[in-house]
Image (cartoon, rainbow over all chains, first blue to last red; front, side, top):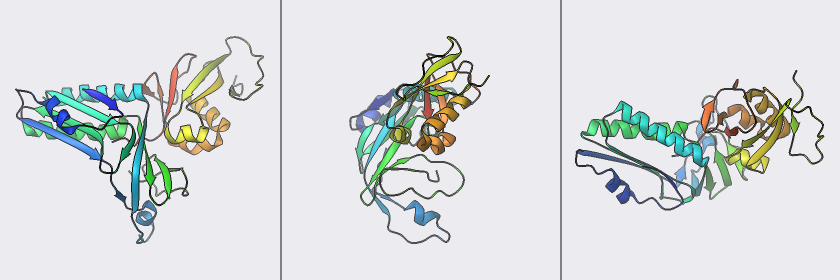
Length: 169
Length: 103
């Protein structure tokens, strides 16, 4: 089951959805909004400097809905080819997500735990690489920043008000 | 061969073109790209037979605030990732996919 939703994610429901009489293992991953983030400027300075962690007030998620659903479905199909899993649930929340609330849930059931753990881990890793969803961090201290991570060289965050931040993945 | 792309979003764009020599494309924009362009779709007119790379250059020229993000972005046509040499046609749904940050 693939879902994009504005509503709070009900993790009990997610686990119930993957329950399967042929399965002895159910793995649930929940991604939640962190309240504290180490300042990228402090962490990437040479030498690294002490700076107060950034406090997140909330996240806002944007998505290319049609493609996000299509990509998530493709990931499920591929996971089913790689591992003998039975049920899969992938839910991503869009819009505003407050601190400590769930932004994403990935659940997998399989006859045995090894496949369930591996598939769930792969699915969330690939979701984070391939699915057109973006988060905007709203910090208590310094406005809002869209997160567009790029690999490679150190990037310093842009100025305080609504900006694009490139950070190490 | 390479006629300059025209910005179909500016008021008073010149209209005289040879039918069939240009294509009209609309690019979907998201996240920081939508914010920089101040809209979620951007229309461009490109020479027929243009590749995605031409669209990327044209968009960067039309919206300089987008240039850096364009360099870091992937592109999708009809919900599939495509490479820079993908040949565009009218009626394709094209999306600029900046580095993603879901999950």
